[in-house]
Image (cartoon, rainbow, N blue to C red; front, side, top):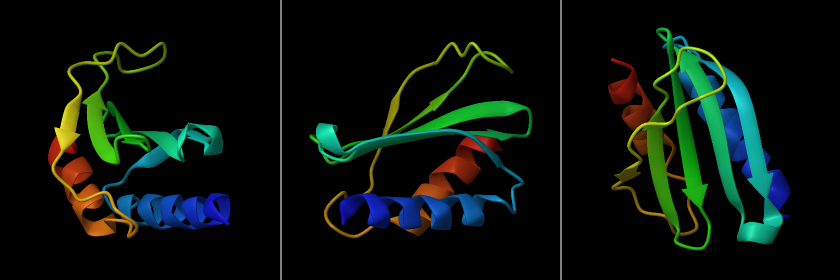
Length: 101
């Protein structure tokens, strides 16, 4: 069901980010919170958290002010990408690439 679809989507996302290069360091998913999820990737010495709020159907991106854990997350930037049923892979990749540069 939804969990499997989510894992497939995140796998596609992480594969797409490998060319940055970016490394997945954390992943959270909650089917009990409307399918909300978050990943933390490390790239160019930065730690970025990309999150999906299932209740709001909204994506957000944050940059850690710390180069390693524990993270001190900066301002949360809401991404202007459509939530809905389909997974906005290219828009999410573009947002991470932009934040990493």
